[in-house]
Image (cartoon, rainbow, N blue to C red; front, side, top):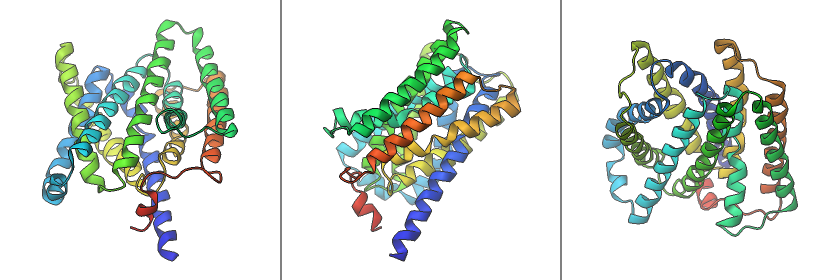
Length: 310
């Protein structure tokens, strides 16, 4: 019993560390965008993270990588593609809309996790889950209405952030399945590597400048790779072995709070009343979704029972 409790504390601590660290991403991205295109920022974030992890993985996890089945490699590649789409769309959204609107909307991924569970896994949505979805959708609409007067570009940024949320939902759902058997490094390395390759090819095909304009941009890119990517995302992926994908994505709702405070402090972007109101509704909706997910009779994540014994 004590062992399970200690394991649970470490899992929740891992989620907390991940949320705090990824909260820094939006501000670092805004700073990096002053010297590089959004797609270039996304590509270098994943490329640098992959290069840092490569020697560690080759020394400690090469044997485990050889045991991956063809299906597991397929899942890992799919997760990498979704991660690439997530970063390409979300990071681009930060060039069009405010930090708070972008981060709040991209944090709606738990809603899409619930919908995917219903459509793909044939899990029936409870009344509580349906009510939670409606509340969160109204919150998203409020943010869109607040940006309506700011022009088409601002709304385009909101749409891109929502695309990022859908991609993140698929990424976490796949991670929930693979992390039941694979160690953290054996999972995140092929996923990050795939995303890096996809984003780099996208940059090359688009004829964008591959190298940043300013030397200081390299600092922001390196901090993005080491902090939000390696520490932040990897902490969340680590927790997927012990907690459901819905809970982990719900926990990321703490990201808008930290991102908004940092943007207000460093970038001078105070949140609008519409963004605050919409963010509160989204938070209420996703917390309600979490309660519905954890209600008696709700199905547990695949492999969760096995993982708790590890």
